Image (cartoon, rainbow, N blue to C red; front, side, top):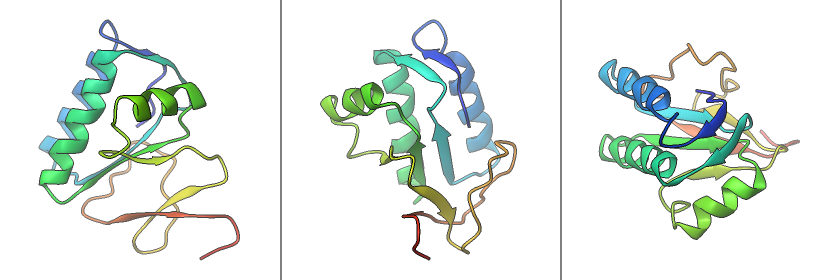
Length: 123
């Protein structure tokens, strides 16, 4: 998933709906690319935390990728880095457990495959 613009009380309903649709279809692991998100408020944080908790109960994972530094700092200050697998560094990439690169197409679903972070030059 790749939300754009601010992720605030006025705008986070779209991400909430995308997550609900993914949960209803049985998705267990989700990557949220925050590179195009300009700002996050308490409502946006609540959506991410709620999704992470939901997936954790299902033995899944919510991965936040490409988060701008100010958003990473906000997640850490609000102690959400414990719930989320933050891969903020642009040198990292998220891959599915079978070694395939994480799909850039947000319409592709991961199903129950596990995700892992890979540093450049490694497997």
